[in-house]
Image (cartoon, rainbow, N blue to C red; front, side):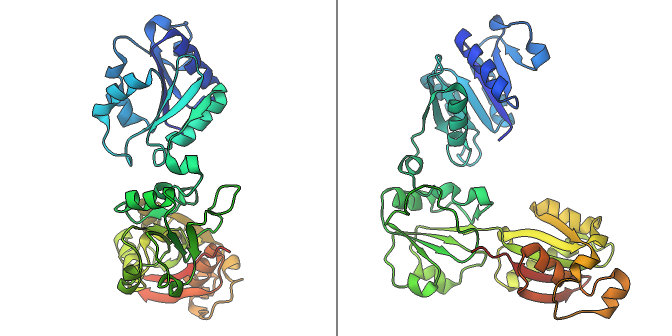
Amino acid sequence: MNNIAAVSITKHGTELVRKLHTHMPEIDVYYMKKFAKGDEEEKGFTLFEGSVKHQFPDMFKRYDGMIMVISLGAVIRMISPLLVDKKTDPAVVVIDDKGEFAISVISGHLGGANALTKKVAETLQATPVITTASDVQQTIPVDIFGKSFGWVPEDFTHVVEASAAVVNEEPVIIVQESGETDWWAYDKPLPSNLKVIHDWDEVKNTNANAALVITHRHLSEKEKQMLPTATMVYRPKVIHLGIGCNRGTSAEEIENAILTTLEKLSLSPLSVKAIASIDLKKDEEGLLQVCEKYEWDFRYYAPEKLNTMPIKNPSDVVYKYTGAYGVSEPAAMISSGNEELLLEKEKSGNVTISIAIERHE
């Protein structure tokens, strides 16, 4: 998180936010004009007069995080009309006027306030105050599970029930089909109420109150019926799309070919990590637009690199025009690090697609 504001309304608070800026130069500093020291313009600090609450509506729109050296009660009263949703509200951290405590106030997980609190506390040598149950108990934070790896929750419909099951030490199963396996972040064994399962046959024999499912697949109706109501589905970034296309193919055609193919294979677009192709396509506008729209990586390789892959369907025609015996298949293999294709090359209009799944041990 780099888009952060630090705000103070007192003399001592001004010293604290200036100190924070020394160690965290990425933050924007705001304090009252009467505490000006004369170097504010040089340092890019903002001075204001009047009630600080008039600054907050604009700040809530502009910043991802806000550090306030203001009493906790006053902060709560001033920001309460601005709160919308924990998925969109900025992280808010409050520091007392002596700099002894840094308190995570809102958006602790999704907004990053807990992490920001720890960073501020370390900088000021203060005591971090974090009340989020999963952090205090050192267990799985359901709302941001796998976030550091880029995992995306399918939705948040059952996040409250699933979180409650985890922190209340109720039986919870973790069904993992793909994605990074080193997600347990604490130097202690996994709590006994959490059971990791890799086989759906085991799911039938469990009596769990909640489930955390990590998969790139759309679940079948039969699989959904095996799971408790309080289920969260996470999409790890493991799908690599090898793409070949004719020059000038539109973004719309490429996107439609991708989405149609993923749907046919019951794969989630949320689990796509990258589009991979030959370096001749590095400036292909349609590919670039699709990657930008979905925030997918775009990777491309020289023909010599592509030719190192053991593809089943080499083409002399493709080699004649590109110098590579194949594009979509070897590109998917290289990008994913997996020489076993889930989908061998399949042509759809001007687009050829291959798919490989990135493996994690």
